Length: 368
Image (cartoon, rainbow, N blue to C red; front, side):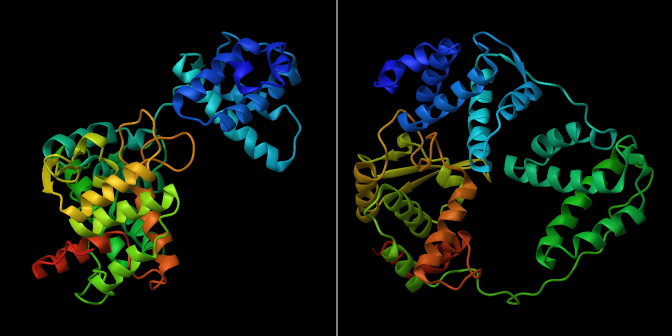
């Protein structure tokens, strides 16, 4: 494998003290989805690291702290230090795949230990989606860590802690965001009181008022939707990917989480159907595909999607290849909206979903 990657310089790698480790690491990188160029770069840096200390790594078990010390032992420039950090992270994932990395277990602070039981409650009793549960946990963790010491129980909470947290939070977020924060806080405090973790009710919290139409319209005018789609340059694979994503969001009202969950099997060209997993509602949606959307999807698969073993419909542009995340869809919209000249900060990726809803009654939402 080393001869294939380094046809001219393979003796340097085969004669290295860590040649066996380089061979295994390189094979793992390629199997994971890294390009040949990225693989060569990572192997080159790993060889320098181990030859700097003149040590073979074959079969060696590391801790995370040892890895950090190993990669920082070599004196290098700031730019190379960043690249070494990338190689260390990739090598760490490789060691994890071979069970050769010792993970140090850290005990959670007492004040947030209750969240281990709170998450199943949100999932099984309230039926919340995983992304929503993560938001609840983030808010409650921030509140508890700011209000209590690590060894204090939840029972020590008082109204003073809540007032201080909300006063601090209100200086950092908008009133609309603060509404959601207080709603999550109320839910946790109500749960804690019902289970007698706190002695008195603390969930009676005033929430800021918001008013209809006080913010700019959330729906993107359909003329701007078409302008946005036409502005995307489809000469590159990334252009085709971004165009197809925004096309599906605009013409079918898909959420970012639903876009990233699409796989190749979700598109049935023969039946002209799109199978969508709605993660927010935990339901399954079958949408009919019109001729225009079928053409877009076919051209994307022919010209925009890399040929590989991944099942996800939309893949990352950078290595290693794999499915994109929901926040990447938001970034794609912002990037393309900026290039199109849309008002900065006025619209988000969800504006396409609202545009679909507003345009649907017109009966022409499938216009090109």
